[in-house]
Image (cartoon, rainbow over all chains, first blue to last red):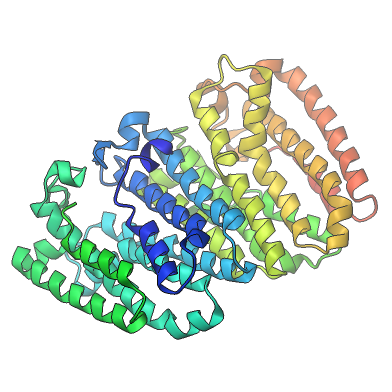
Length: 260
Length: 260
C-alpha cells in the first residue's frame, strides 16, 4: 500500500479538493482526510488497472508496478485495502456535520461504484473498437471523470448550506468539463510524452489497441478539442467562483498544459 | 456481480444481522440494507480469494468461480464493485440516526480494512507453516471473525442508546466466540464434507498447504475444540440476551452442526 501510494504522482485529486475548499472559504485543512482518501482511491484503481489480467502494465509513477514488485496476490489485496482504508479515513477523521459527511461519502462511493469508476474500467477492458462516440465519452466520464468530479463536489457537500446551494450546479459543470480536459490531454501525452516524464511507458494506449481521442480524431483534432475544453472549463469556473478561484484556475491551466 | 452474489450460499452473515436486530427488539426489516451489504462484502472477499493469484479455486457455491466463468479482469472488478456497492447501499438505504449509521459503517469498514478481513487474507497467502498458535488465531479472527462480528455488532450500533450500552460488550464476546466456532467447523468440514454439500472441492485446505485447526490439532482435537467453543458461544449469548435470542441460539447450533 505504501509502495504505490508514496511513489509520487501529481496528486491532482487531493489538490483539487483542497483548492475547491479554499475557493468556497473553507480552511483547506478541514478537508485533508477527504483529500487523502481521494488519493487512496485513485491509487487503488491504478494498482488494479495495472494487473496482468487488466492492462498488464509494468511501470507506474516511474517504478515497477505493485504486482511486479510484490506479486499479484499482494497487489490485489493492496488495492482492496486502500479502498477500505479510504472509506475508514473519511468516516473516522473527516470533520463536519455527520449528515454532510454522509452525503459526501455517498457521492464518493457512487463515484467508485459499479456505475462509476469500476463501470468505466469494465467498458474499457471489453474493448471499444466498434463503440460509438457516446460510449467513448461515457467511458471517460466514468473511469476518469467521476473521481475528479468527486474531488470538486465532496468539499462543497461539506460546506455551509448557503455555499452549497448557490454553487453546486456550477461547480459540477466545471468538474465535468475538467474531467474531459484531463482525459483528452492524457490521450495526447500517451502519444507525445516521454517514458521518463510520464513515469510509465509512452504509447501504451496504442499497444493495448485502446480507442482514444487521438486514435479517433488524430493528434491535431485532439489538440483542438483540448483547447476548446480548456476554454469551457475556465468559463464554467468563472460562473462557479468568479472571485475566489485562483488556485482552481491554475490547476485547470496545469491540467491543460502539463507534460506528464 | 449477480452471478456470484445470487449463487446461493448459507447467508449466515445477513441472517445473523437480522436475528441480532430481532434479539434486541428492532424490526428486522430496519436492518435489511446492512444485512444485504454484509453479504455483498462477503461475496467480494470470496471472488478475490478464489482468483488464480490467491487460492486459485475453480468451484464455489456449487458453480465455477467468477474468474472461471467471466475471466480474471471481470472477477477483480466484480469484487471491487460489490464492495463499493455495499458501502453505497448502507449509506443511501440504511435508516437510523445518521451518526449511528456512520458508527456502524466505520465498524463495517474497519472490519474489511487492512487490519481486518484483508489483513487476514494477507497473512493467509504468506503461508503459516512456521506460524505460532497466536498467528493462526489472529488470522481467523481477522479473515472470518471480523465480518461475523460486524454482522452482530452493526445492528446494535443502530439500536437505541439504552439497548446498545447495556448489551454491546456481551454481544461482542458472543460474536468473537462464534467466529472461532465458525472457523473450526469450516476446517473440519474441509476434511469430512463432500464436494456436493460444500459447493467447493473438499480437501482444498490440505492441497493449499494451509495450517488449519485440523492440521494443527487433528480431527479429534478440532472436534473437541468445536464442542468447547459451541458451549462458550451459547454461554456468551445467554449473558448477552437471556430472554430474546431464540433465533441466535438456533443459528449458533446450526453453525456448530452444519454439514456445508
